[in-house]
Length: 347
Ligand code: PMP
Image (cartoon, rainbow, N blue to C red):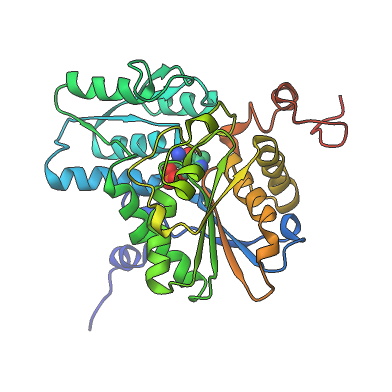
């Protein structure tokens, strides 16, 4: 007679992740309803907030770490260095806790306090650099990260702007997920552009499956990527300060693959901020301001869509990162974004 031990039975029936890194990816695709009621197409949001660091950047952070380990550039006890607007730092800090690395990040003074506080809570050292200087300036968050890398022994500088692992993460995970979730019926992909990793990796994968899929990027006024896409040159006269976090550039990252991008749409920071609130209030999807920018950009392009189209818009990060900004009436008021009808509280 054979006995099945109760202990083994439970052991074999248990289902769990070996650590938090295994929960990265496989994010939901959620239909948008109210905020896109003027659009004559099915609009689906790839909501990346269910990643452990609440953003899509967990995917590329882990990939940059694993690829650096495989190349022998990141060794046990090593120090991870990166210039990050917060979300990449969060993904790196999570990977570092699980894998036993130390992190030093440079961030700009524009980043929300919530992001910086969270990075520090995860054990990272965060150095704040001025946001209004050019990347070549010795005090820019880019240059400071580079200097730290040169003077810190056993360190690895991720450099998400140039690191091919950034694009590869989206080519190998985000892109295939979107293709499978839409059963290959996607006709348009629209997303904010920062380092270019998301649009280039997802865009390349989707175009390989179906070259007809349109890839649309979104950036704030003040960023130079649209000028590069359309003229091949950086029009520096277009570069100025803007409030939207995570997207837009005043330089051209290697990771932006302009060839796979069909169009770049400019969006005002006000429209992005108000749409971020609308997504929260009308769809109950809690996302950050690059999500609002992407939907605002899509609305600007609605005439190009027809009812049979299937649009996927990617939502990068969580609203909790913007409690002191987009979700705060005082901050919104100071930016000049509010009027009597769009306040959160009647004060
Ligand atoms: N939105 C947010 C909130 C981000 O942090 C980033 C990354 N900087 C982006 C959009 C842009 O993503 P990517 O760097 O892949 O272009």
